[in-house]
Amino acid sequence: FCAPQDAESVLVIDGETEEIHTITLSGYMGTSQTKWCGIASVGSKLFCAPANASSILVIDAKTEEIHFVPCNINGYKKWHGIVSYGNKLFCAPLDASSVLVIDGETEDLHTISLSCYADIKDLPRKW
Image 1: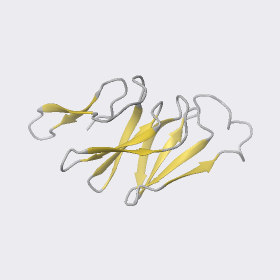
Image 2 (image 1 turned 120 degrees about the horizontal axis):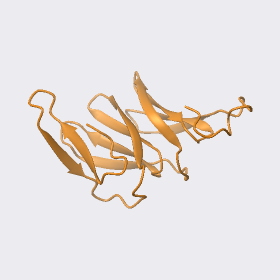
Image 3 (image 1 turned 90 degrees about the horizontal axis):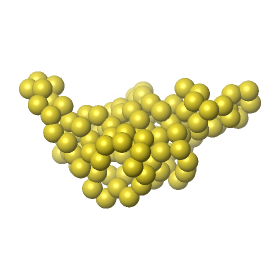
C-alpha cells in the first residue's frame, strides 16, 4: 500500500504476484496536493500521516475500505513520515510544532509538544 500524496487513490501492490490496483479516495473533500506522506500499520489497519490533509487516512488492509480521522489541526506540511511502535503510531513533524500520536486501536489522537525545544520548534522542515 502506498499513501496518496498528490494522487486521488491509494496504490496497492500485491507482494506475491506483483500486480497493482488502486483504491479511490471516496468521500475525501480536502486539498489535492501533498495530502498524506508516509504509511504505517497496526494490525491490519494502515495509517497515513497528514501532510496537507486535515485528517488521517485509515485503510483496512483486509477489506480495502477507507475512512478518515480528523486531526483538527489545519496547515500545510504538518507531518512527514509515520512509524508504528506497539499499538501507537507517531508522525514526524515537518513544519508542525508537535509530534502527532495515534492510538492504532481506538484511533484517538494527541500531540507531544516541541515547546521545550525553543531553538527548533518553529523551524520549517524539521524531520
